[in-house]
Length: 121
Image 1: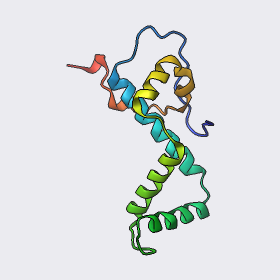
Image 2 (image 1 turned 90 degrees about the horizontal axis):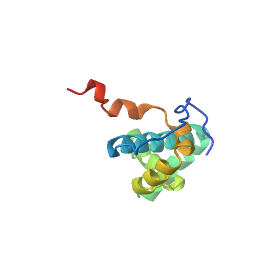
Image 3 (image 1 turned 135 degrees about the horizontal axis):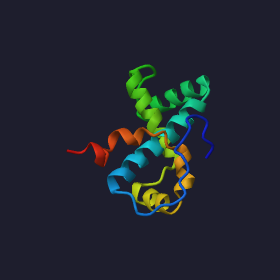
Image 4 (image 1 turned 180 degrees about the vertical axis):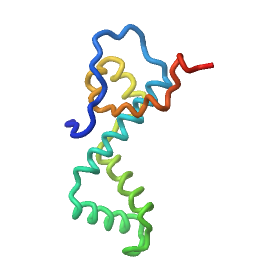
């Protein structure tokens, strides 16, 4: 799992307690999004075109019948299947044991979806 973009999360030295599920779910979405993005960005333009045509055929659409949003949705679904991303429960269990294996892939986007205790009213 080579990470080409982003700085990732800083390494942690001690983990005193399990993170709340809300934080883990946000990190899971960040991780999966980053992995899909990495693979998509590594594709050559010709390969994206080939995958788009294959996606149209897979759903039985005429060539050019799908709009760009539909094609991209199908491409992302294909990439997610090819990546074989773990389900949340498996990921969370492994993340709690080995955060250093996943933190380099986190873009930090998860932070914006989790309210910090300092900002709670």
